[in-house]
Length: 194
Image (tube, rainbow, N blue to C red; front, top):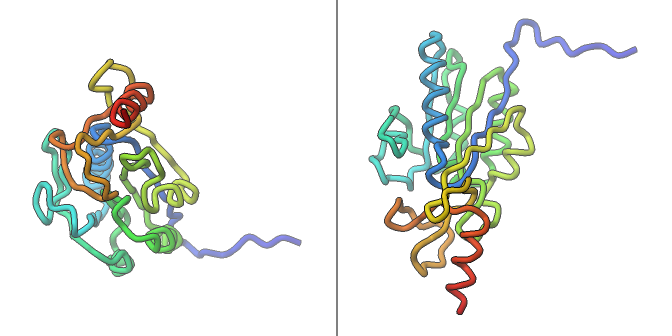
């Protein structure tokens, strides 16, 4: 005989991942969801990687300048210390977090928290970026957002780096990156190899 687990009144938690290329609106969508949760009277806590200081050290900021106050962290264990009354936890630029973020967000969801994560799904090489693939695997809800290709106007899925820098993590904006569709991304890489 199968017995259902007894969570005695525990709120059911879950994980949402918003992913896509640069300039696709990931942070904008994260902020929209978090603001709606606040409007509904829910307690929200937001975290960002300490290394991402492009728009300031304690703000999550979209390219269209919407922003929310956030806690910068370098170790995702710190997200486990959210107050009991917090019901929604947001994480921005999750590709920069260590792989342990996957187990930490699952712990939060098991505690009944709604966890909303935004991050790049691929790096400039077109390869999976950091823990994002593993986060997609454990998420209940996944939203893939798209930019517009800066060359042809099609849906863009890739972040094309405009410099020859080869480090995986190079913080920048439109001065260093473009959103490109698959075809324009490949064409740019082929031309660079010549």
